[in-house]
Image 1 (tube, helix red, strand yellow):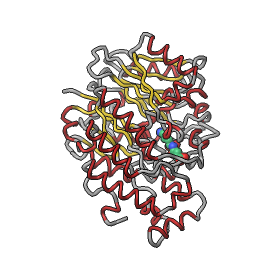
Image 2 (spheres, helix red, strand yellow; image 1 turned 90 degrees about the vertical axis):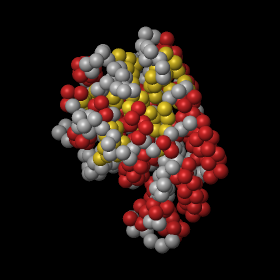
Image 3 (spheres, protein in one colour; image 1 turned 180 degrees about the vertical axis):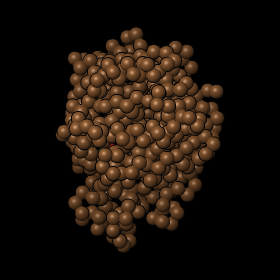
Length: 448
Ligand SMILES: NCCC[C@H](NC(=O)CCC(=O)O)C(=O)O
């Protein structure tokens, strides 16, 4: 049986904007109130996806959620027509931007996914993240469950779990804090969960929040029926969280046997490497340490070097890999030099590709944030809803859809404009046909 990694990228929604909502995410906070360009954002994301399709990778999309969310505004007590609800919510300081964020584009935070070779029942397991650290993200989880169940609908192959409770100490941010190391995708892998805080210790960040907790990660490992001997729980270095590393995927990235990590990423790094190596039985771990002398934590946060995608080149017998980076990494001299050294050195990473993802980057979302990795066997691949799979024709159709429906400028004040809500609904209504999702959004089901 063949296994592949499929990247499911979040399609950027029509309300992409800069509201400075994420405390501890330096880019988000520093672009607060800037004008955004939703059209460019969506096209930048699609261009990255298309480049991977052209190189023979399997690529799919996850649909954006309806924003502003009238359903959530109603749950928060706003009444009246849609226009009245928007007008009333806009009068509450800072509230409407939270209910209007296009943040579900960062699909790495949608869920934690365990491929079937790792799970006792031989199914692919999904737990949608509760994203409880931020209201604008916490409201994603219900709809994420719906999207995942619509796409991965066959219970023979796929198991879905409810998001963990959103109580204090149970924060879960999905795949951004989860990495899988394996000999090949079809082998049983080692799943590494990285957390920022744990209930039984005061060791944690002091300036910025720890969004992922040990308790949450342990619950997911249990739900996914993982073998304890193949699970590694790792504490993130609290000092780097306080420097703006709000998710582990801002400081480390793994693919197959390669772990590319900053030397300051973890607490007790040697123990982490030893445990990974011991638990990865079919072959040795290939640790690639990025020394702080070469790239400082501040440069890592600015350039998003580690928020890259490490992708095994299809058909490459040596399992060579591409590192796919944002252009910000090329503009940073230290990082660009490091990447050149990396691809010339003795490791499987042989090629670098750079993409303009500026619109997403200004909110702290790089290439890795934009995608959810799902390893599937041929049979599981056949069993998904194929409407979301990107090929040349679907790419052209989606670009055309974006061109027709998206604005090229959005100011924070525009979020209360009822016309924006209507434009978004018209766009999403058409999207469900393009992606073959059926009646999917609440407004399509008559429930607003
Ligand atoms: N994985 C990348 C996630 C980025 C995301 N940014 C945001 O939500 C910023 C939204 C804003 O500020 O408008 C976050 O911090 O969770």
